Image 1 (tube, rainbow, N blue to C red):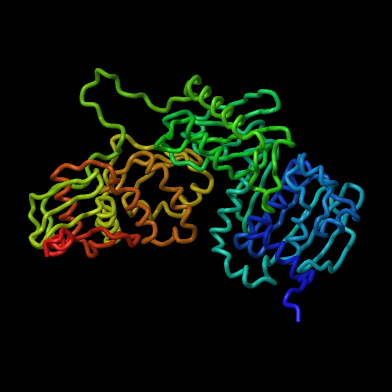
Image 2 (cartoon, one colour):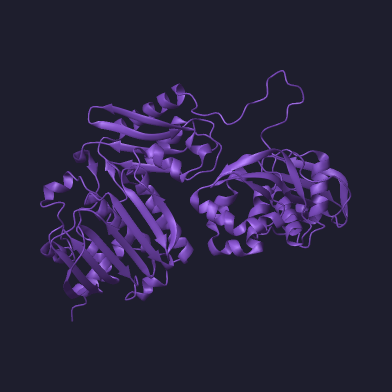
Length: 544
């Protein structure tokens, strides 16, 4: 009896759908690209439960006649290519004819569309068309996808939390919003507005809606064309030390993952300590791009890659070396000023010096060494301990917050932070809790806050403070929990690896660490202390 058999059409459809649609963000991506291919000026997106319960995309594009609408749900039905040769010259986001069929295969699917003449309403479930009705709607298309993977429980159980899926969708809309500034985008989840991006003239203007001023003011617009290669976008000047998520790469306006382009970008900045902000769009003739690598269409190959990367590198180097800073936010002290205050750290004192009970029994108080500015070595009567200074300080700050022993220390120079819409929402949810934890604010404008006090134990640079709300936003619903927020503040406020400490600072840190309830693991579970006895060291050196 033969062991090989042909899979049924239903099984083949589910396998293919799983290659194209892997999560709610995949649904939104495919529908959004169809809207852009249809020359939409406005795209409205609604999701529920992070997209797991509902993904709805409504546009004002060209729409479809009834015959085309019915064909669109068949696999490999597309208006974007007609022959094998067309794959060598792709001008649109979509071209494989798989998206709508794959989405309909794994969901409850409804589509209303009109080309301005006749409206069509199609209802399908698990790939099977149930009803085709007349519809009264203006030109454009509205697609509602419900209960994703309801018929694929194995795939459904691998879905992540609603917050995680929602963040992926927000990131996706920003990605297309940055490269399509003349299209209006709206995103809501359960009637809560997440993004509202009106039409603007340039990606620079769009960046101003999505990213802090400290990032946007460092951006340079690039526009260079040589032959059929046209490189456009935004790059940051050297010296940017603000955390950001402005790192977009496009080929012919298609968002792509392209490791070699990213490496060339960082090479142009001579491998900086902090990654540069950038939006790079490489426009080349379609026949020089292979976009048919993966069903997700987020990978491409450039057929003249070395030439294009070299050209891009030269364009970026020229831009960052010749263009002046757009805005200066601070006046640096004059060279002749006496008693200059260091600008690297907001607070210079790690902790008050003094005596603390609870130091490890048997430690020789005067024996401390710092290794690579990161680890503290202390001699004990029984051997040696090594302490990770960052996580040790993190434990101290965390317990002081959780036990209500934290005190605020006013900053000599308050810090102004411009928040993104997502960060401002998490600020509104957590600001009362943060005040209790020693962080005090003044609201300056709609999305700008001024931080004028920090926990007395904190040693944070400006970049760490600016990134606080981004990390709190990443917590999702966990941002309501005091312990989770305290972990973020402790990590942000702790001294960092590579920071030199004086002998007194090392001694105080060790003493305070062993006065905590749990001196051996940090709030995130990492070990703080490693220890070796004299016997263990002797064994390693072959003495026993």
